[in-house]
Image 1 (spheres, rainbow, N blue to C red):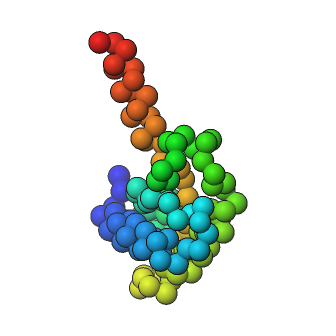
Image 2: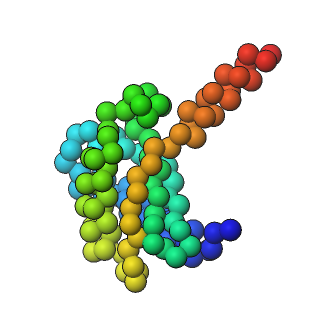
Length: 115
């Protein structure tokens, strides 16, 4: 069970990361990233940022963004968060492709075939 504090920090991080990506990112490959959710560990040590890409296929293997680009982005985002947010410890940022949309589409296709 997640704590109320980690949920609040997750909501704050989602908002701030979205602002940072829209205002500070110069790389055109990263301009269309949409932050769908942020899950923060109970000790606020790790924040998993779930994202999708606007205007691209839903599958991660068809995406133009690789993990090395996201590693560099996470460092830049974390340093910008440290300047904006006043919490004791800024969590490590890990980006993860949000597969829930793809999953829900597969379920929907299966349900249509059953009809």
